[in-house]
Length: 80
Image (cartoon, rainbow, N blue to C red; front, side, top):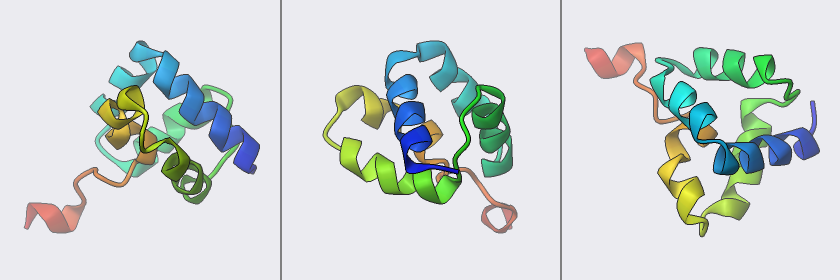
């Protein structure tokens, strides 16, 4: 796991609209992480969160905030 991999992932989300769309379609953090891992990025959600804070001023990043950060997915508790 690595911060550098998380950085590469965030930069890829900024530049890859298809990846953003697939991540937005994912229903859970686990699904998002499965996509991230399938794309070849070896990082944790905690590392993504840490790196993503550096990109908060990026307009494209903010449009993809949900897929990048992964924490705005509904949880089972949200549905009750």
